[in-house]
Length: 499
Ligand SMILES: Cc1ncc(COP(=O)(O)O)c(C=O)c1O
Image (cartoon, rainbow, N blue to C red):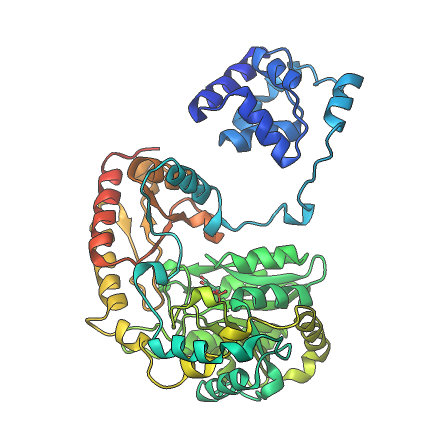
């Protein structure tokens, strides 16, 4: 094949995306990629082919596979290497200093707000109405916090002008400590509680304080991707263990054991789980604790959905089963109290803190460095955690979360080629696609095609570090009428879709 083949592929991809040379040049400037007008026209006219960094940029912008755009080995060998920039071009490229993101971000993935979401934003900008089933944000779907919470925050606002102690207000931490007592977390005192701007901030802080370059941490697959992102950003290596769909999405103990090495420092569990909606029973938690004990691992347990458990089941904190281990348990008010925007979460250190003295010092340092978490939100922790719990009505038969779960589970599994494990908690379902039936090999492309065809936004399994292209996550927070409309469209899409 000749050089023109590359040019043709490039032109096809540009036409498909509706992008002109100037669009690519502008996008390159924004991203700090050196791509001048002369280069671009040489690629399009087939005079030369780009170096690998430019090729990667073009593939990304045009949403095509880099390997495809690059071409076959035989073709590559026949190509001329793109000449070095000549003096004029160099000075053209050097006139404006541009800034690239840190290479620390190279392997960080957070698709909950990623490329499919960007495309949805672009479509919305152009006036298209998008049905959003992509983010676990209760308020836009008509879930509101009890009036008492708002009232108490308003009353306390004048006293919240200053920084609080770094780990949080006494009243907030006392309420969290009492919650820890009810959940039977062992050996917890006031100093073991840290409030944060959501659990998100504390996940980041915990990973930064723990991981040296190359340290390994076991993280579930599928996961809530912030865990993997923060572990990676901290320099650690996220090693994914499988959660097994055949066993109600419980962690696969053999897989966990197989993946432990001398560098493994900790294991993360997400219970109740996002994205699967699984709730781990005592026996499963016990087995995880046994593995952690055997291999001397820290347990990080993300329990932000612990009050959104259905079917009369009871949530158990793994820390309560492991008084001899060092555990960090995370929860907050974003989901159970529908105040994701207030940004309040916490982490509780429990069990054998002696083995983690130095790590705890690191946590304190980082906690002090951010001064404190949002004080008005801390001021309502006591009100929210105790007394009337509006969330309880949502998760009982007749309640919105319960009925929406019943609806979405039935409606999705009625679609030929779609199966799912019924979620027990939280507000997510993670259905499986029969990839052979639809010939699906790229799940991000599936999500993009669904978005473009049906104006429905959801996140493909890969966004949760799930390696096969055969799952997607639906957030079932919208009312049943909206879910019905969405599932009808999804069913129609699957009636003709073939990748
Ligand atoms: C498992 C899990 N952990 C943490 C978070 C972040 O919670 P927060 O709002 O407290 O930062 C989310 C949000 O969706 C989540 O699903």
